[in-house]
View 1: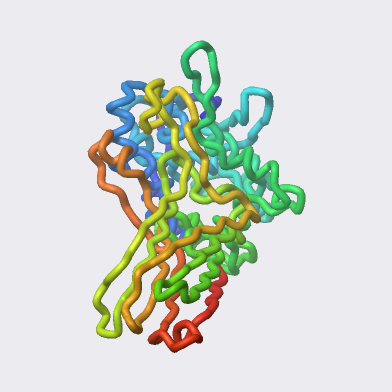
View 2: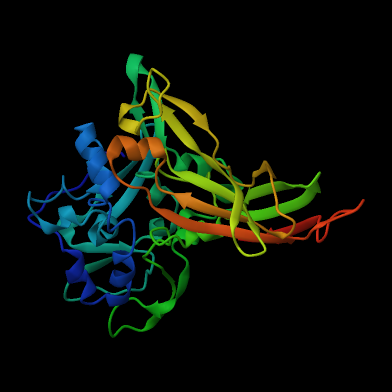
Length: 366
C-alpha cells in the first residue's frame, strides 16, 4: 500500500457521474469489493481497532489527492482511482502510482478512443498488466524490533509463478473480456474487461480449486481422501487478508437424509502475537502458519467417518472471510461462499467384499 502520487485538484468525478455514460461498467463495479473497500464491515472494524490510517492509500486512494469531503473519497476504489492513473512504477519499496487528475484525462487499454466533451482519453496498455494491481495487492508492515511482516502477498506470489512467466496477468482472470459498448452510443469494442472483478460475488472462488474425493470401506467405516488442487489461481488460495479460510466439510447422511458423522478442517494463513495467539494483522508480530494452497499445489486431507448401513458421504468446500479468532477480535460475522462439492453414495456391507458401491472416486473440475 504505497502512497499514491498526483496533482491535487478541487474535485474528482463520482462514480455515478461516470455511470451516466458507462452504465454497464458502472453497474458491474457496484457489485465489486473495490466499491466496498471503504465501507465493508470488516475493514471499518479493523480500521477503528487499529487506530491507523495506513490502509487509506489503497482503501480510499483519492483521499490524499482531492479536497476533504469530496464524495469520491468514500467511494473507495472508484472509477478515477484506477482510470486517472498514468503510470505505475515498481521499485524496491513496491509499486507507486502517478495520477493525472488535474488533466481530466482518463486512461485505459482501448487506445483508439477519442477525446469527448467530458474528459480527454489516454492510451494505457499498463491497465492490462499485473503491475497495475501490485501497488495495493502487496503490503508489508513493520513488526517489533524492526522486523518486516508480509500482510498482503498476492502480487509477489503471482510474480513467482508460471502465470507470470506465461504473461497471464491478474486482469486475465479477474477482468475477463467480452465484446461490448464501453460508453453509451459508442461502437462495440473487443476485449472490454468485466468491472465486477469476479471476486465480490464469489465467482472466482468457484473456479479456483479442483476436487477429487475417494471413498472406500474401512472395517465398516468410510475412509475418505479429499484432494484439493489449485488449478485456477495465480496466487495462494485463499488470497488476500490473513485469516481468510478454505473450509472443508465432510458429513455422512443415512438413506433418509439424516446427518451422522461430520468433520471440518480449515486452511489459511495465520498471523499471531507474541504469545502465539491468532490476531488481526494490525496486532500481529509474526506468521504462525500458512496452510493455503499454492498455485498448482495439491493438498490431501484424510477423514475416517462412522457410517450407517447405506447412505451418502458429502464433501463441501467453502471460502470464509475470516477465522473464528478474527471474528471474535473484530465482532464482524464471517461470510461464506461455496467453492466446490462432491457426493458419493455407499451401500450396505457385503460379506467379504466391503461395502456396495465402494470404492468410488468423484472428480470435480473448477
